[in-house]
Image (cartoon, rainbow, N blue to C red; front, side, top):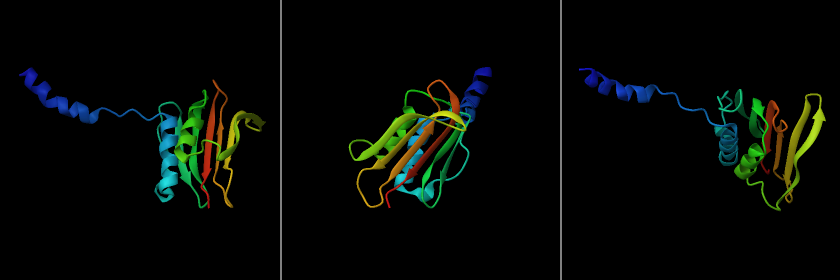
Length: 145
């Protein structure tokens, strides 16, 4: 009898098992891929992420991106994900990658890239905490226009 009840409840266990929240780098990539493909589909909702307190995609008339809080800086996973998502790799893009800057919020790594050619080049800005430090993340993508 007990085995029969367990067999009946097993499918319910699968339905009730919570899904693992994505890592921030995966959310950055999927958000920016959507920014490139169809910015109107980017929804400003707070997202749970496995390796930060929260993340929130956004879009305005001019740009699209994501902010997050409580992420621990690493060796460049967010920059790699963002660059891959918008195609900001190779000699067609110029700028600085993970340059240490200090402002009123303290030290942070800034990546600022622009397309090398075009009358209205696309740009990508990533602000992230230094490796090992927890803090906010900002990612802004302005598509070529």
